[in-house]
Length: 162
Image (cartoon, rainbow, N blue to C red; front, side, top):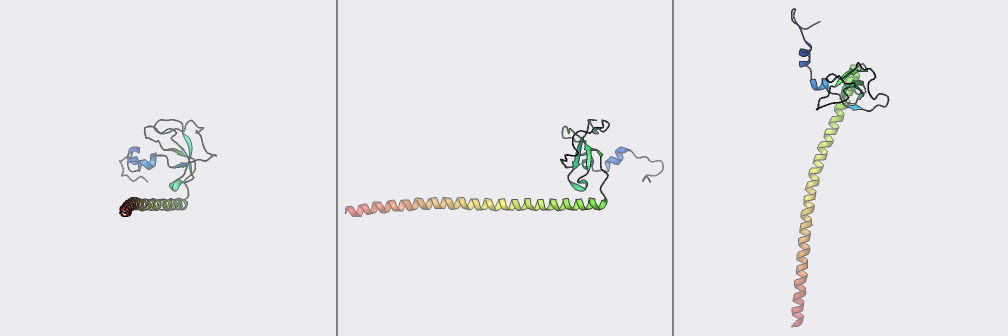
């Protein structure tokens, strides 16, 4: 059933305004599948903006992981026409939720590693500064000991001359 009152109409533009265009237009992350690659044989399947022939892709992120689709072959000027046509039907909703959860867990773990790496780098910088300081102190100590031995040698010569 339409959600508008009698006499009102809806256009495609109005429907698109409520959608997340980034998600709708951009190609999702993809992976290589040797059994599904190359250009689309059907010339009627073209990208939305340039009407260029599409390429075959396999999704590798999010709820559509593993789904095959035809998408923009040549993104230009940062514009990606996105998915032109899905080859596979959507996964069952339970599988979509599981895939979303797995990807969420992956991103959380990855974020944790990034944070741990930043902490490690900060601690490593601190230790390197301490090492540099200790190296400088050691050099100064060696220089002072050398001066002390030189002074002692000079005093021994003076005492032995007397």
